Length: 107
Length: 120
Picture 1 (cartoon, rainbow over the protein chains, first blue to last red):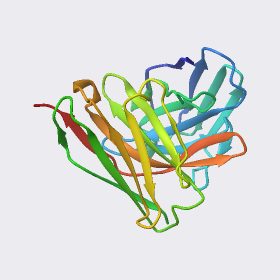
Picture 2 (spheres, each protein chain N blue to C red):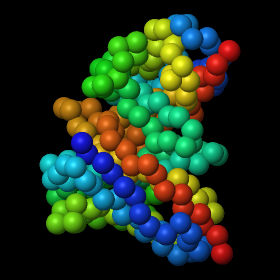
Picture 3 (cartoon, rainbow over the protein chains, first blue to last red):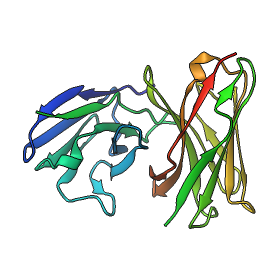
Picture 4 (cartoon, chains in turn brown, orange):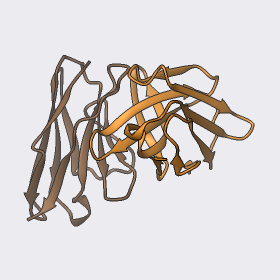
């Protein structure tokens, strides 16, 4: 089974900050990696697929990079609506495992 | 704009079968993959499986022995059945559209989720 480990588990940041979240896979998986944003009481929302492709309608301040076992989600210029929990998900295996989440909080 | 809505009992007794339906509106169910995901505070988000509009399926191996998915294209609905439930199956269940781009799969439209509690 592929294990997905996100770091950090949580972070505090201010509006306007540049924020990066890392997702590490226990085995190589090319670019089969998606990123989702979830706000309390809401369903996850797709941000990035294929490690670096921006989903239609998602602001360009969100970007994804990486391949193999290490991936990064970057928010370039945090906005008030970006305070949420972010999850990575591998689409390489039939388990399609999610990371444990990274909560982005207001400093 | 495609919208998904989960429906089904919010309370299921242990050892019984959890049954949920997802209704697709604003778009066609045909031509797409449809998935179920669940979320608990303890385990986080967990992939349950998907069904193609033709009826072919792919389940999470850890749940495969208890899961059945079906699709009714005439009603624009797909369904999840999970049998022999225990308290560990208590979760928020989401349905979602699973897009396939080459060999990449990702969920671009989600339902709002429905809470299912397993308790006697």
